[in-house]
Length: 210
Figure 1 (spheres, rainbow, N blue to C red):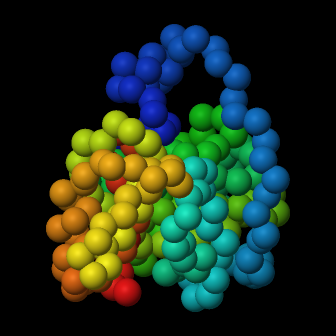
Figure 2: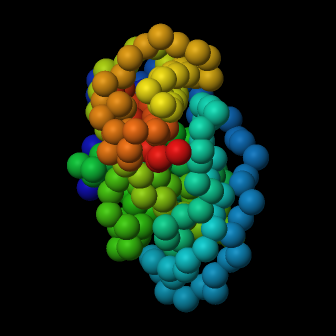
């Protein structure tokens, strides 16, 4: 398991938090739980089951882009130390975990370890508490790219009949993103590429042909 930190948290902030020297910022506020998938029968501690099927996935900074709402795998896991009712995080190709949403500072590694019995990084997770310390965990495989872009957190590049259009956080932009152009050209002459910032220069990307 690689680096574990909150989204937009610097390494220095992570070290201060782990040493108990952070600035005492309050935990994230509770958010309404997502619809829960059917609870699985309880059996043994740790990984309880793996079942196919849809699992709602919602993240912040949603823009005008296509988003899959289903998971590649769904498991139930016992994790007694995790607070709150909902957690979302992304695991990068090198194993680093970036937490997007969580109440408190619980270690989500047990959830990631259960997922990785079925799905290799990179992937995005949405976890919802079922009953007591039992969590339903849905994981969706993603593609990740690394490039510098300072203007926003969501990019949509569309190319049709040689004409390109770029939206940044839903607004038209004249920005050029060669990395997304190369991804789109894999799909053919007419394509759309969507990119959502995960953390820093790391982005989740999706490319498809028209």
